[in-house]
Image (spheres, rainbow, N blue to C red):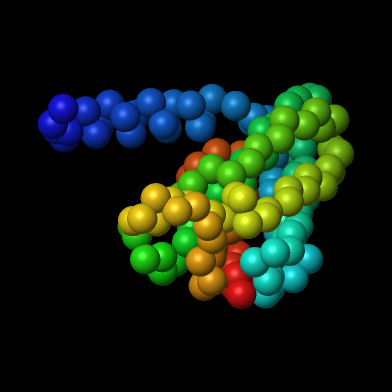
Amino acid sequence: MKITPLIISILSINLLVFSACSGIKDQENKNLKLDKTSMPINETLTVSVDITNTGSRDGHEVAQLYIRDIAANVTRPIKELKGFEKVLIKAGETKTVSFKLTEAELGFYNRKSEFGAEAGDFKIFVGGNSVDLLETDFELK
């Protein structure tokens, strides 16, 4: 199948529709934190973010975690969804959402069809959709 600009446009629209359909109307994400900025391959990285419902109604928010491998030996996605969590946040309330990243979430299949993670720099993005995101980075050793 040949991928044409029309198909790419349709796929992009579907992605945006999916990512923009959930969440609290008036919410604020802040305090994106990592428990370490350098992680050995066999360990776990904890990512946390505070989500505040600044609206007047209770609501659900879907916190989404994306990663980007800055320099892999194969082309990697710009943003790759690695976790999400739906949380109920009451009006005026702040909740902390945490995600765990391990070698399994950071790995990919290389040109030899071998799965594994490569040492290097990564970016982490967290937010309520794939566009409005907080960003930080870490190094995988």
